[in-house]
Length: 426
Image 1 (cartoon, rainbow, N blue to C red):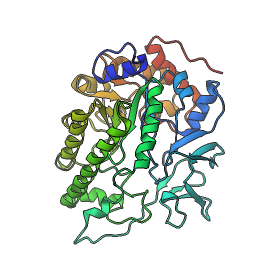
Image 2: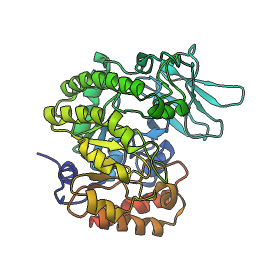
Image 3: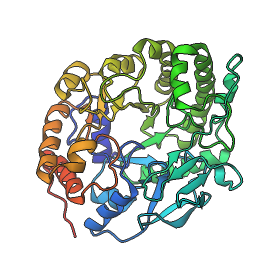
Image 4: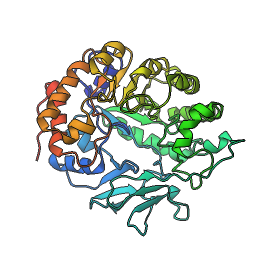
């Protein structure tokens, strides 16, 4: 018997009008909230006080436990990834006090040190002897990647150097995913599963923060220039990555079985606020063939839907995402150039599900009044939710410092649109 919340999300992905608009927070790595916001939300709803589990150390994203997801009547649950981007497995946890004074749980293997400035460093794979690959400034709220650029042989670059972080998933990692997927399925929500190594050209991954020592092209500037100056090199990297990914997809399918509804694939951003970071032609040539292979395999071998994350002014790429076989696009950054809700819905809404776009986190949610948040959310729902093809969430992860009144206003606006009563709070 499928729960209403799961059915609503699957109907939406199939462009059927759902019984009510699905709402997602915490269901993907791109629709979460900073650990500080998760704690504030738990407190506002009167849920038991417990330290928030941080499953994404870079962005310090907090896990939505079942009691929180149930209280908010959310539609999606995240399969905990097997490890963090810094190479720590996510099966055991330890307490850690953040620089802003919050008690959180971080992976037990996280190797954290403090430097002479008071900045916090994280060392890859829990190895204190390896050079740090992430830094949280002492007054900061996130771990930034440390670029460890080894330099490379420009005359004879070796694509294998940029493939080191991609490997076949271990039986342990698959067992952890299977356990997390079974738990997520039992919650009655649709289950989303991040597929490790499925991001092609993701700038957040280029520095190789999970590796103890890096080889190849690890500087972001060099990587972007390579899209133009070394397309053959990158094409070989992507082909190698796709080959590993297809093997891993078969393993993940075997491990999670029917306990998955949506595969979260590529998180690479190709847009800025005002335009594209690289040409559509380069993406068509370099990355489209890989996307087609991966989405093709998933749609031929599983019932899963697939979602692509791509920030910025990416309206010119929507057709490419459709051709690539993606079912949904996130975060739908309507504040970026050309990302007009009504035009996006009219032009692509019958073929792409918009997962996000509910409220602008950079502006309205962070800096507006609760009433402005409510108005924007209701307006977006009015445009995007018609006929399905919409999952309500904010534009990307909710950041630390966002007023809890605004978070509540956003959640209650979505509920108001659905004809659900406002959330009871403590």
